[in-house]
Length: 208
Image 1 (tube, rainbow, N blue to C red):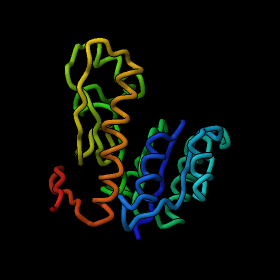
Image 2: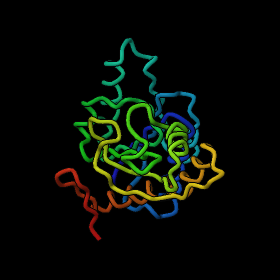
Image 3: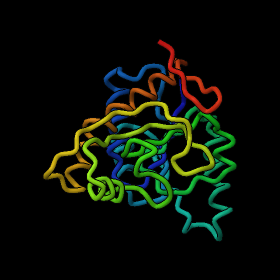
């Protein structure tokens, strides 16, 4: 059984999609061991508790410096013997020590078709604002492994979503969540739990 830790900072809509997929049997051989948020008031923690999942608030503000916070997060994951770390709307910069420890075992969901509209400072509504400003006709979401860069890890899965002429950043954000993010994130977790995802020379292969 794959032990999963989900790291979040806000409402946890992607977390809810994963919880629903597990409860409905669309994700097999995996369970969420813990949900961790750097924001102790994040509604994602309440979502976890409602489903009997341990919820941990771990804020950098509770530590004298960032190194101590990073070490506490590292120990939280390692002590639980986590198999897969899922960043689902996590706004914390993950330290290299954790990235190395969970190489090809940490995934992130990003609300665009990487390499478009991604990188440092490009998150949340900013992604959709940039997409609309550029006038693209197709956007979407990407699940990728996490490496030391920002949104630069090997791409696992992408799903395209049409951009409408009357879209606002908020409407595009919602449609991408519903049609792409909530679809491919659970699917990728299930594929990893089934042992069907491998990485070779920076490229992901998914076995049938």
